[in-house]
Length: 164
Image (cartoon, rainbow, N blue to C red; front, top):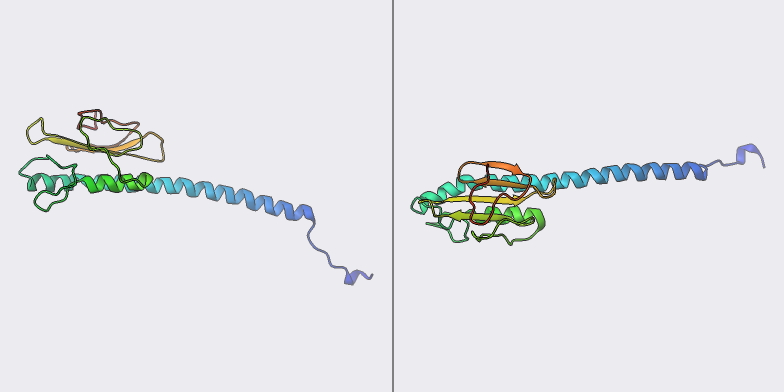
């Protein structure tokens, strides 16, 4: 056979090296997508909870200067409660629509919790929801203007404050 008729291709080692490099790059890219997805979930949770403060004030005025029922599903004078914000945050976190609105029940690891108290006249409220990027962390907002990420659930039974 003459040298001009000989066809030369890639060796098996060269092909395996290219496949290995592509595999490593794909693993790095897929890992960063998972992190970005979790950050997106956390941003959605925080955005929903940030929307509760002005909505709670609208509810307060429509409900005769009282937060009573602000965590419930029934609107006051056609002004919606903050329940839908809590449900949206919970859905972003794990797809569930179940949230804790029982004042006497403490917040739990994987559930958004909304508490309202009328023990101090017009009342107070607080809402927290779990975050994904740092396991066990929560974003919490309350009627005192507090809004921050916490390292764990801050809403105990009969509690309506997030802050220290």
